[in-house]
Length: 234
Image 1: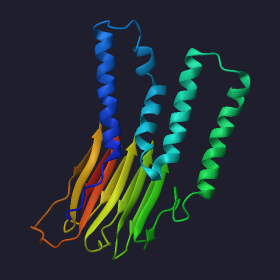
Image 2 (image 1 turned 90 degrees about the vertical axis):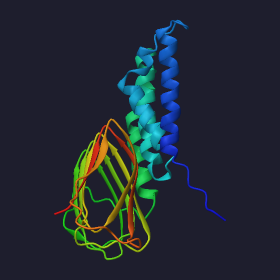
Image 3 (image 1 turned 180 degrees about the horizontal axis):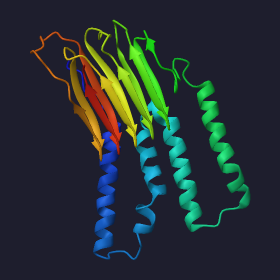
């Protein structure tokens, strides 16, 4: 029985949001309903909410998505309503407490190395760079993929001395106002299945030969929003 492909929820949510935005713009352009949509839509608060909604369906990014939605909704509400002083004083401590508890009681497999550099022999990558830079060199001979998150930050991942595991190996990328550079040998088969919005993924490797059919795959998936991913080789 043929296996059904998994749904790309980030792309689905983004598509629905764009359709909704198109409808609101049509309503505004033709004055079909007397609401100044620009005050609600084209704000940085709404941008945070939209990014949070895109991230939330992904199980590994729900904490980030929840925080962005909460921050955007709080400041959007404060823009139109006078919130009680008690809520204003409790908001930021509550956000920091939520993030801290999520880091403490989240997946024990997650590795948080915002400033660590040098060589590692891990088979899976799982790194987060927020307002910072990450520089890592992998030497695993059974590299399986993993996840890279850059939010207002950057990362350089060097796989020149690593080898991929046989079969399909997936790296889930999330770049929001951030950039990532991947150093990948020319004899790796790289497939890009990334959703790019005001950003992109560029493969600048110099490929010297046709790869055999049984070559292991490194598949790049995820979302690039106002950011970029560059693939290079030495």
